[in-house]
Image 1: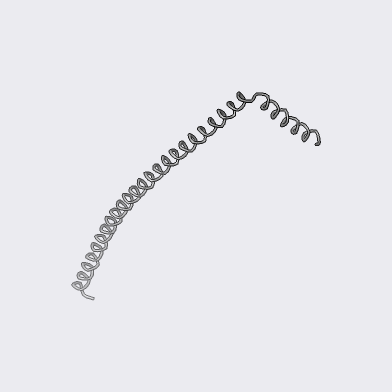
Image 2: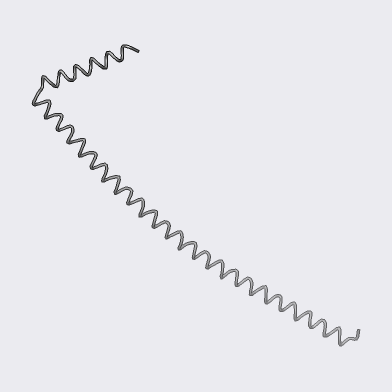
Length: 111
């Protein structure tokens, strides 16, 4: 080969190297942009799920408090009703407690 052809070939090789270097830089920038976008999307998704989980937790607390209050009111009503019955009929209450105690004692002694 003559010198001109070798020189032209070297220039072409150098040009191809520069093109590949440019392609590499462009790919790196593209990957960085994509990574940044994915990170932003992941943050938005996390925040959305976090907010939803917080809402569900608060709803569960509200429901729990509501049912606790209802159960507490029913318990208080039952205790008040039982107290009223004992005050109205104290002898009957003592007889009922004695009967229940006898049955429990009888069943416990059979073991």
